[in-house]
Length: 339
Image 1 (cartoon, rainbow, N blue to C red):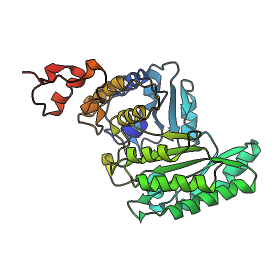
Image 2 (cartoon, helix red, strand yellow):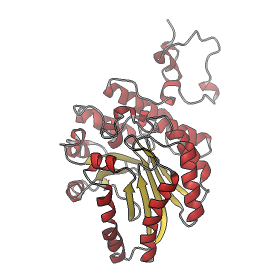
Image 3 (cartoon, rainbow, N blue to C red):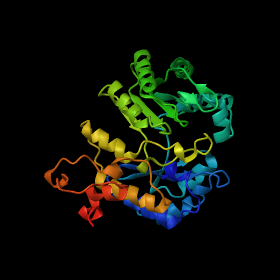
């Protein structure tokens, strides 16, 4: 809801957003990002977040998070907690963008200003007697403004962060890598995770925020799952239909993310139980397409999951199926292509 809606028409109604949120709550998803408490001057799509969080119907067992980028946003979000959980990292984390141009455009801060906050974060962790922490990087593999970044550069930045935690005796157990400008590839993700594990084998928690502007997010997620060990924890972000994006990276709505339905469909085939009803998730994609007034970017919502059960198999006598509308027979029935 946050990642997807932040690039869409600001005039999408609150009622439509609430209906979509309530439908997502019934799919089996364990966590849903409702939106963000940010300045409407910069993100007008989130101007009415307060109305959304008072109108939707929280479902027991689902965690609803909201992003707040500063203290003012945190205070606004606290007024709705519960049912909201303010989106926080599981660990105190030192992080920095590899691209100074992008971070200035996106947050009006410099790369140096991000680094200047590190001592404060470390000091706060010490005061709270925290024993474990994280490191991270954004724009990890490249920038639309500066070009490709080598994994060596990524590792150099992560090592600086790791050293700061080492100096105060706090163990680093987590790493996060973001890719707002869609420069991820399976090879880069695999190499990055392999080198992190090789250098710091005690790190066992990984978070990847992969954008899909160049159609590499799902392949990169697959590479991550194949690279890490069974005892590692991997967090991946996705959006229904793959919609979303950042207005400051230069790709607009083309940025996208891994379509949740495609990602979960792949994971189920890998033997990873998700607890999500793909059929209901497809309904949500179609609902979102109706709200947006256009087709979204996923594939499973168009061709359907692979038919496995007898009742899912296609009629061997079906006529030619040519259009996307006809292809929805997998869910809507043969009337989609008959007549």
